[in-house]
Image (cartoon, rainbow, N blue to C red):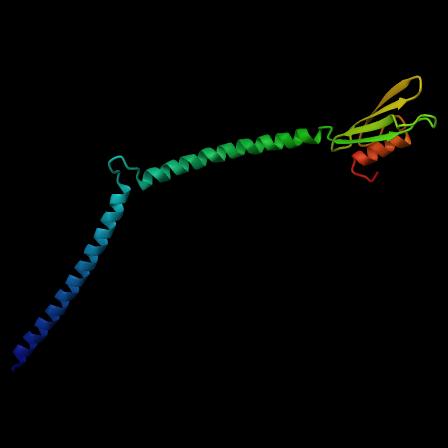
Length: 163
């Protein structure tokens, strides 16, 4: 073989290798385009079918609606918590015999307090011939009028103390 024929053979081999490489790149590109086309077809609207884009848009809208509802519920919860701190929800009753000759512990002192200790003490003293009822206001667990031991006990129990 002459050197010209060797050069032509080498050039032919190089051309063949480049052609096979080009063919391989073309096949890979064709596969990728086919996959991309398939993915794109899923995003396009079909006959009566909801697309992924439609589902995502609807989901985002629902998410925004839920955020608004949660914010509204959060403000309602905060208002309810504020109202609850002022509710007379700490209650206790102490029953006792106001007079030694009476049995049955018909007398009582009841404390009704909110979270701050504001509220009232209701005392009813039962005797043989009469019953008297007293009401004393409380601010932070204290009264302007002196509390009896039974009334103080009712306030202490209502505030979470021992009996």
